[in-house]
Length: 148
Image 1 (cartoon, rainbow, N blue to C red):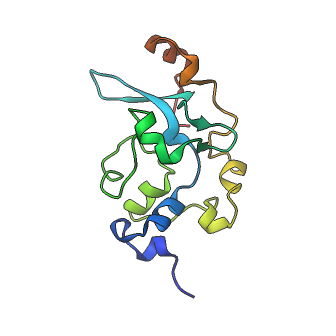
Image 2: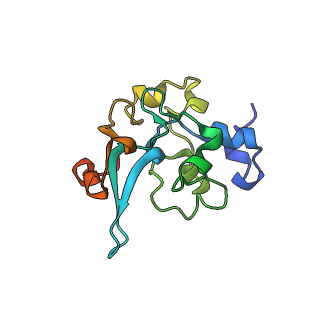
């Protein structure tokens, strides 16, 4: 049996379709994060991007997200190795670091629901949307104790 493509194909050599399929659909990258200007520490919040659909854990306007959300970070083979806030469970990060995907990843399990069933995704865990918050200080009440 052939090895799965994520084990044999470098990120840079993946087709656009392979790259997109690698996303596990957890939604963690679509949560607002706060950075301490003095230390550089990143703090996760339970606030979703204005385009994030908390029920599906997907972007509601993926094709236009980079134009519509100025601080949206489009993941690429070049930047996944340098973005320090990518979750430890992120498929892009795992593959970039030479690790295999977890059992709950849809490419392993065969179901897009296992990421939710395993409690990895942020489905049902948002407390606000960016659109709900008027001031930067409003985010502080949504800071999480650890990476979701």
